[in-house]
Length: 182
Image 1 (cartoon, rainbow, N blue to C red):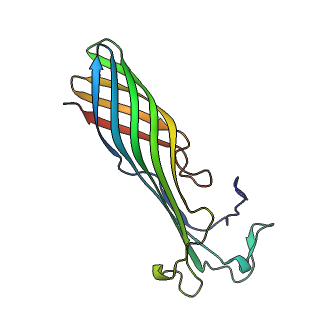
Image 2 (cartoon, rainbow, N blue to C red):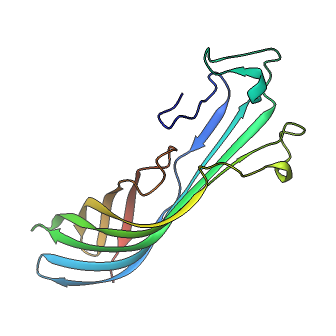
Image 3 (cartoon, rainbow, N blue to C red):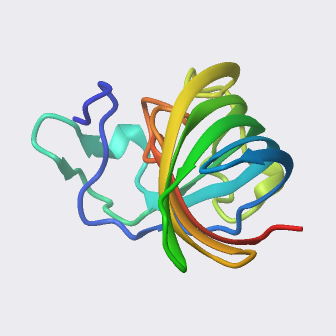
């Protein structure tokens, strides 16, 4: 049983795509070593697919299936997060200048989970979405980043804690971005 009380079936094929394209566009003001920025950020999507047997053919306590043991159902998950970032940066001296970022992310997070009916596991038109995991949330979370700046080019690692959901792998998000300043 997972940390959220949901059971999962061992030994069945699943795939999780945790990599996605993220982007941002924004405006800022710099005075000396300090900069202040406001931007719109799209952190991309999380997708997962799994095949498994129906509930009636799986023993949750022993983590084994009853016969037949062939997967008859397909599950699919999708999550996304986007919103407005407000942050302050402190740039250290040097030709290649390290910098630190701290801010708040006003985000819209969406998560959906679908499962096939048993009649035809590969027909997406038969998927149902009645899980309590499905939700949309608008919230504010802190975020932080570190990076280096060379002329008008930045490379930055940013971490967004608890922007996603508590019940899925799409919970904490981190990005590596290359950006140009004009």
